[in-house]
Structure formats: structure tokens, C-alpha cells
Image (cartoon, rainbow, N blue to C red):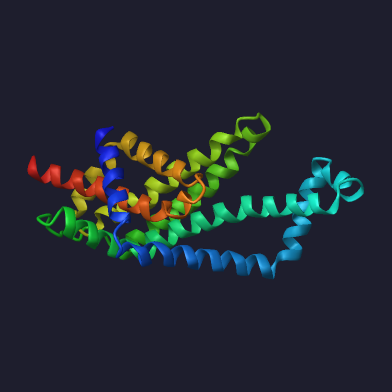
Length: 238
């Protein structure tokens, strides 16, 4: 557990560096603008879908006939935010994994692991396949676990999904520049519990207001620190 906390601590320190500001902000801005544009273009359709959901639970008639206008608008706005924020965070995670990882890896490696040699065992295609794999099974997790909401324990679903997505998105890319193909296979096949634990801890951050907007970059940095430290230790031990 100590190596996981150490990775998170170092990630927080790196995130506070001035040069990290743009790397952290631009994926978030891009994701926010993307979903704002989608919401604006399809606002009528989304509103109708929301009212259909209300109708299923018997709330639509009450909202139309009895609820004051300000309350209806407030409920709609709150639900929009509850959907918008997770979509932005997940999209930011994906953008960070695909586009920002090289800059983040370069920063961490030069600052904390200067003697770690590059083996370039990962590939661009491998990274893309890994990203699509992560997204596909992330969606599957949500679909398969939908019955849990009916049982009243659906609150665990976002954290399970976040834990999976985080560790699947970043573990490969964190090693791709420095590890050899064999080292990547060996490291990814080991310490699965620790990888899921780090994914879960960083997943919790995605649901803390304000902090959640920095969570994607923090998650990426934490996995880079964790994996590069494992790689360095592996090479030292022969």
C-alpha cells in the first residue's frame, strides 16, 4: 500500500508544478466544450428523454401539474449536471491517456527517474487498442451492473467502473516508452490488486467537487509514478 500512496503523493507534487497547468487544463476544456456543444445541439432530445425517465417513475405528472416552475427547472438543471460532469471527466481521462501521456511521462521520467533507460516496448497501435478496450469494457460494466441500481446498491457501480477505466487506460501507456515488450507483459501481469487499488483511489477523486476536474491528470501522473518505480526496481533486482 505504501508504494501506492507514494505514487499519489508524488503525483500531487507534480500536479502543483506550473508547467503542468496547460497539460491539465486543455483536455478538460476540450471535453467540456465537446459536451456543451452536444448538449446544445441535442437539448430538445435530451429533455424529452429526461421526461420519459420521469414518466417511468411517476414524477412527470407531478412535475407538470403540481411542482412549481422553479423547482422543475432546478431538478432538470441538477440532473443535467449529474450527467454532464461524469461525461466530461471520462472524456478528459481518455484525451489525457491518448494525447497528454508523452508530456507527462517525459516530465516524471526526467525529474524522478533520470537513469531509467528507454526501451520503447509500447506502440501507438497498442495504445489505441488499449484505449478502445478500456472504453468498451467500461460501458459493458455499466450495462451489466444496471440491475444493482434496482437492488439499491448501485452506488458502488461508478467506483467499480472508475477503478477499471483508470487502471486499464494508464498502466500500458505509463510503461510504453521505457519498458521493453517483455517487461510490459511481466509488469502488467503482476500486482493486479495494486493496480485496481490505485484505480479505485483515483476513481474516488473523480467524485469530489473541484478536485474531480484535476483527477484525470492526477490519475495519469500516479500511474506513471507507480509503473516507472516498479520498472526501476525490477531492473535493479535483475
